[in-house]
Length: 206
Ligand SMILES: Cc1cc2nc3c(=O)[nH]c(=O)nc-3n(C[C@H](O)[C@H](O)[C@H](O)COP(=O)(O)O)c2cc1C
Image 1 (tube, rainbow, N blue to C red):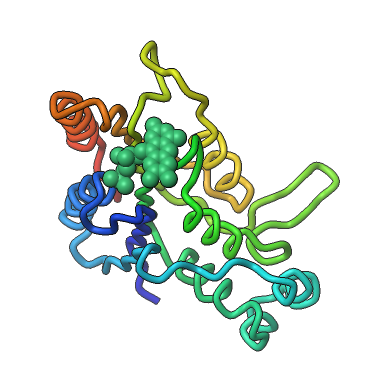
Image 2: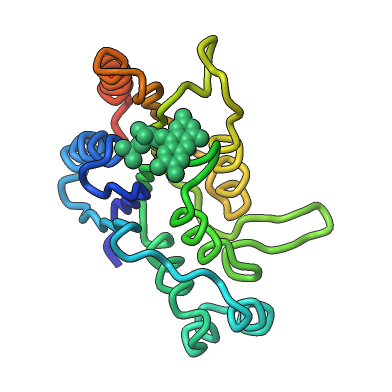
């Protein structure tokens, strides 16, 4: 099966969001490097993944293989999203910071793809990821600052994303931050310039 660039946008503002507009620029660079690789684009705000329910919780324990899960109604969204991820050679995630962490739609996506027996296994030494690692670019937009000297708020976003993606086997993370976007036009310009420089300096993925 042809490998893809999988792009997941998590802002409620969809294509008008700062995070997704920067992800457009990043995806364009990746596409130029890999012209034969199709882009699969999910805008979570347009079709939010369902919250997991009791059916999911029960089925997760009894239908762990991809084949068994595909037959089970409660795991079908999870199976589609995990297969999409398995098929991606590169992952681009764009998200705002919401209340110091991930927006609810991204948490809903995470709850669907982090599945016991399918994308991670529990061992005596802890959880072990079952998916292949791949370059993963995470564009984050925030109104305030959460890194450096200007930070005045906790950051439960980047450490959480690191931990949860490691749980399923994805550790090759590249964060691109757009911070301070509520601090006026100059701050937006500065954030965009820094992020664009970072994208330009990124080595090609082959
Ligand atoms: C519900 C909600 C919660 C937010 N929480 C935070 C926050 O905790 N820290 C912060 O710096 N900005 C916060 N913001 C501001 C957004 O992160 C900021 O507007 C960002 O630029 C949005 O990115 P986007 O344009 O990609 O959606 C919040 C915005 C909303 C709507």
